[in-house]
Image 1 (tube, rainbow, N blue to C red):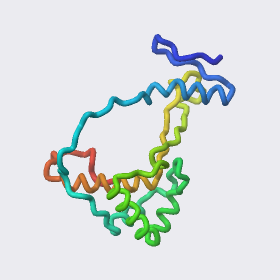
Image 2 (image 1 turned 120 degrees about the horizontal axis):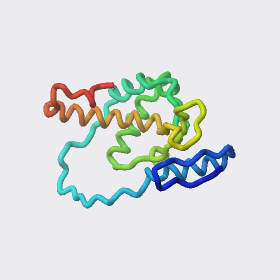
Image 3 (image 1 turned 120 degrees about the vertical axis):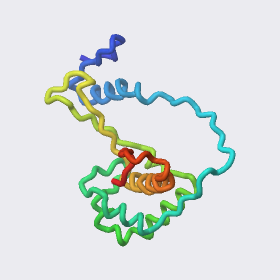
Image 4 (image 1 turned 90 degrees about the horizontal axis):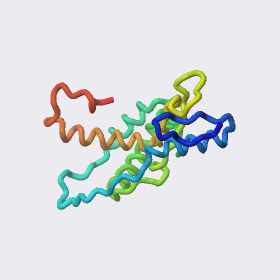
Length: 168
């Protein structure tokens, strides 16, 4: 039953063998992971101030982490961050600041776990699956710090009816 992707836009049927099925998913969905074109942008001078990570902000974000959120490839549970936010606040604030200052991101934060979730009770073809991508919970917390910083910086430029970047 294993087939490759059709050129007519149809998706192939799934295989009952788990190893074959996993490989079929890799081939089918890898079409979304093509190499992006290189950007030829050159930054001539810094256009925004450096981000200063505040413990108050970090602990607030950690306290709001969903304890039931899937942990992603790093394995750090959301429950740990939420229940220990006061104890972890200093360490995570220093970590975020050091990462932002050095313009580095840990390798594990660049990885994700992809879970195929059936859209229908009896998925027969690859398009019958919705992909759920799990990323590091700690990375999402740092993204929130950066997003909040830029949202604050650009608040006076946002349309009053803008709803896409409001506080979560």
